[in-house]
Image 1 (cartoon, rainbow, N blue to C red):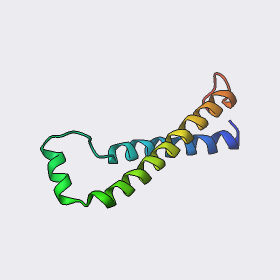
Image 2: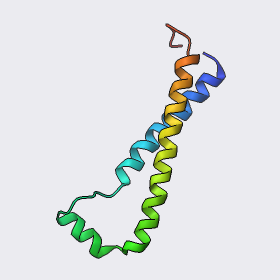
Image 3: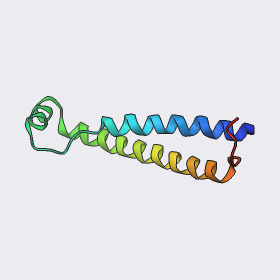
Image 4: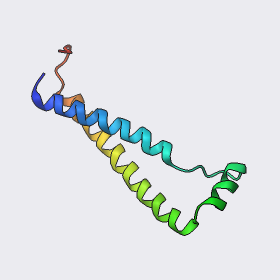
Length: 82
């Protein structure tokens, strides 16, 4: 395994964890009790900007994950792990 494969695996793992964390940080779009409480606690104008930035970061993390996965698929040595 070469140094760039190790670097790609590290970037892949970090982007996978970032994708999971960022997706879990999104607010629900339901109309239940939790949504009513969240609307009363937070300013909706400021939360719109935060949601937009969170969406962008999530898309970037998922794209990095997909690109590194594709590159690893092409460059990782077949049949070896170490």
